[in-house]
Length: 117
Image (tube, rainbow, N blue to C red; front, top):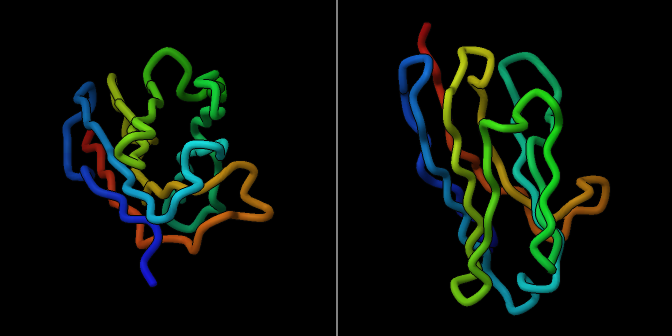
């Protein structure tokens, strides 16, 4: 059963923007802290943003000021607006609950983001 479907990735030049979406199945999305993660080629998965059920957001320094996470609980959808993209942002982007040690959903396929220099 597919629980998470990420979309919106693509190939963009450095400095460009993308908006990712994550559609979640089930009825408990609104009460969960949700996050975007990424996995660069050959590297471990890392979180890039998370948002609590109350809407409070957190970002690591690597993306702060460039990425914005948001959610629409009526649509069970999580978003990630990415601006001023850099080649080092190239990765597969995935969503799930936060923290990732005990994810609430089965991991989806993710969406590929490639930033050219």
